[in-house]
Length: 485
Image (tube, one colour):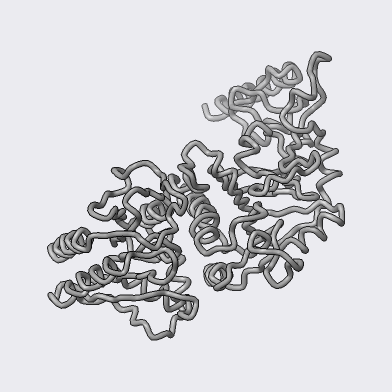
């Protein structure tokens, strides 16, 4: 009986192979009980079209897989994470067989973003679409996405590109970051949010940033005579370089002279993993709300996405600030008197007295502080990291909201007729409750008036008014809630 069954199985197998050999070249044959690798070896076709699926056996597939094609792996308007980004003479180049996956170019990178200088036909973004020739004479190349290129042509043109260190953050603007808020609180913050979302949605452990490139700006010390802050990326107190270096120990900063030399070489360059940050691209997004990170800050992230940066800044801290959590809530009034954007003197005095009364009543530890360039940034971050409730007039110091614990609160004092939403989004992004104080009232971001600040001096006034109790009454309510928690 056993031998009979074996004969039957052998006959069946022989018949199946015979049928496949007869019809296989027509794409009709399939041996269902043989493994794919064995079964496919009988096929003379260019790919598998069996009912079990399709797998290309074309040598061109192996070529494409070995070629470093460009791929956008994460995106928000103004912030683009790219695998295998090519660069040539100030053009960002995407080489891909899927050119329709590239977002609108003005959401990725823009020419001379803030100064609006024409660039004589220069293309900030170039797309090379890997395609076969058109199948009809009616196909018009000018209607295609990007420049059509055959795979072999792409390999010949880009295969020898010089590889640069990465991951790399590229600031594409020629202006507007030589200020702590504009670099750390705007451009970099949007980039970090997009990078953090990439980690959140993929579960990947992303490598640390190795290079921060300012392709169109100078180090302050190397800028040509007569240059000003628009031409360099470093701010006067040195916050931009200090914070970025603390975030990414050992990071390299590349500036305009390096990239100009690369442009002059006429070579093609490859950045294996790049994050392009473009201020105007962010402003072109649907949720910009007057700022470049309007869309980026809507990307989901882990709740500790900023705590990570704060911990890097404080990891080796040895200064005078005690980082240990206090037994009472810590309230800080970060005053700006004498800065040109300040409270009228009597309101400042009244606010100081009312805040100190909270301390005298035993409800909180109160600190009155004025940060300046004479106070090391490490001490500033250390102190802010211990603050539960921060009070300050609208200004650069409110960028420090980023280093507060989620669940903390910040009171921002502005003229009664102004709503300038520079810092409230930072608080929201950090998980900090924001209160905008308008002299005799306050509002939370979702209920505040629309952005605006009329008058010739706008927000830059030295006669801002505030009723002290408006702030301290709410501070006491917050402390009561904290004590019940």
